[in-house]
Length: 69
Image 1 (cartoon, rainbow, N blue to C red):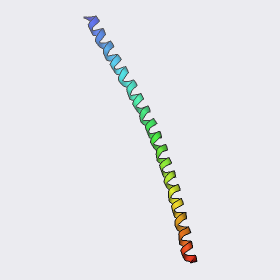
Image 2: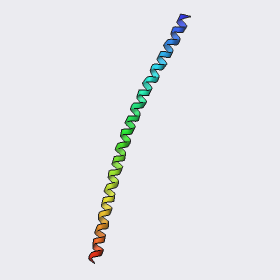
Image 3: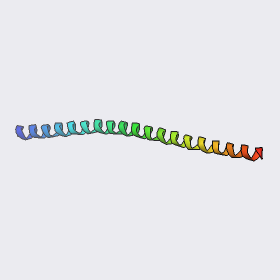
Image 4: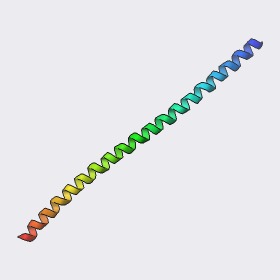
């Protein structure tokens, strides 16, 4: 009977250990995903600003041409 109880305790210890490791891996994955999302958002914002700036420059040039006429 002691052997069965020991095996039960060992199985529970292994299951708790495996769950704890998984939580750490999940937290690391979330951090990694957050960093990736942040960098993607920064890239999108930067490229959007470039497009807006170039479009604004074209509008200003067109307006200057209209005023000059």
